[in-house]
Length: 287
Image (cartoon, rainbow, N blue to C red; front, top):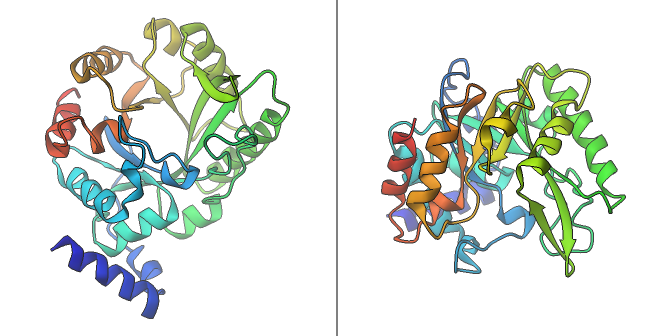
């Protein structure tokens, strides 16, 4: 049956593209607060298609959409984070009714490229997010002390924070201290590096009133999260080798006062046993 839905999406895109904007007039959630569980699916636009041991797991769009629909249908899942192509497919499928929707903004730092740190804003703008009646925009901020392209990404991110705030939309900033090792970008997941990254991200723009953070679970989370008063969501990251240990780390971090939920993508959409519903339900139970 999902193949039929996919064909209907294609027909709509060909013959009635204006239906996408019409579908954006969906039922929106109320005030964003309490605890949030969001599913992330903005990886393909940055050329990051791997999930666990599967190098092209996210390359099959029909399979990805079906997994997203399963995740979004589970009780306790509040919404989704994605790029325009994926969010518009979900709009046409009717999967975003009453859901929190966050548009992904900078996808220009393609995985594995020499220009990865020059993470330009090739996705949503703040105006486009507001125009589609979405709830916020997410930006990835990787800070490489040895790459001068970092400052361009910082400047663009600060501007995006201000523009989202002008629309009263959430600015979700995902900060890392990053380094190139043998030509590949690696994020520093020590507690000291995350404290520094959070400190920089918290000061972006002319206001932090609408800024949230998206952070990984690292050692000494209590000390890490003490670096800012901004609300934060936990990053799910890659498919974990030990899912129970990963969920235990989330559960501990969720006790901290500024941690307000989870944003997880591949770890929920592509679990090792391929049971998306079980992985999502387990994540929701942590809250």
